[in-house]
Image (cartoon, rainbow, N blue to C red; front, side, top):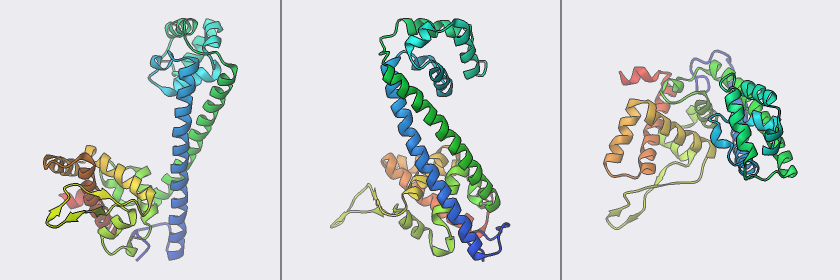
Amino acid sequence: MLVAYPDLKFSTSLDDNDIILSELKSLTRFRLSLVKDLSKLKTSLSRIINIVFPEIEKVFSSTNSLYELLYNFPSAKEIANAHLTKLTNVLIKASKGHFSKEKAVQIKKLAQNTVGNSSYALTLELKHTIKLINEYNSSIDKIDKEITTIMDKIASPITSIPGIGITLASIIIAEIGNFDNFDSPDKILAFAGMSPTIYQSGKYVASSAKMEKRGSKALRYALYNAARLTSIYCPVFKEHLARKRSQGKHFNVAISHVVKKLVRVIYHLQTKNELFKNIIN
């Protein structure tokens, strides 16, 4: 049997499949690293904006439009002094036509009356941070395309579970690798460091369970988020979460039960090469 995927079309060699899974793991882990760094950059940018022009963030529902505006006019002072036509054109382009001259007038007035700091050093930092954010987004987009190419070839049935898309599925597949290395779903839970640790004292068994913190951090992240999303988009897992919550279990404990059920389903789909809809009908 081919590594993990019985119908793998792009390879007939065990070694080739190992290489492909290794590439996928490198890509998904690199993506996670970039996303983590990107989140820090966005937090840093929000801090700078709150200093230089605190009133501006509530005007925008899209951060992309806000970033484009501030990259061109990185301070309230520059916006206040900008020619209205130029400011309007930047806003129209940044919002893809959603904003107009009226919005430019509103922002200009806010800039003229801001309580923000017009520090030159902060405007430099702001512009540089926006540039870095754009570069990170571009890199993540490129990685996503590479991941999608590999996942299209793998054609894993776990993406047939409502709520699990390419991103989470790719992490799960990459981290687990060869499913033949695990003789049960519980072994995968242990590998992820998600086996419940139950504390007992005499006849007392704790009603809550703490998750172990060993194992693959990336797999733990993917399974937790997959459980959370399937509990929203998949009736089977939504009902399972609701049942555990109705038993008085804390949300995180209830989600841990969803994770366990989800891993059993993933293990079955992957080893039997079946679609989710076929096992629930």
